[in-house]
Length: 106
Image 1: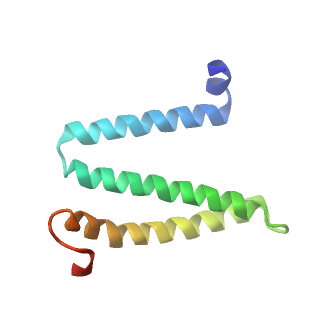
Image 2: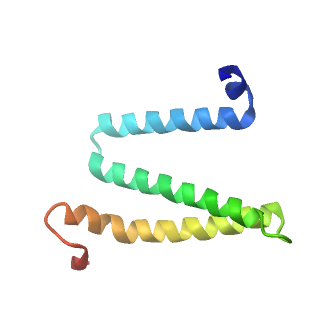
């Protein structure tokens, strides 16, 4: 089972991506650059945006008449752009709220 996951190209991609995320998280914690809370918020939100982009790409690929590439690229770009916009707008407000501010301060 593990050998199949590591030798399969998609399985290897998932293993490498997970390993990179763990290493990146450890570097953020031990480097003391910025705040760990802010880094955590952006990484978690970015992970969720990626999950939503993959979900919508999967749904769009099942629309009859759309090619695989068109469906995956267009739907992913729309979700990623919207997600980045929301992250830039909402994460600072949420982090500020944790320090005594509110979402209406913005």
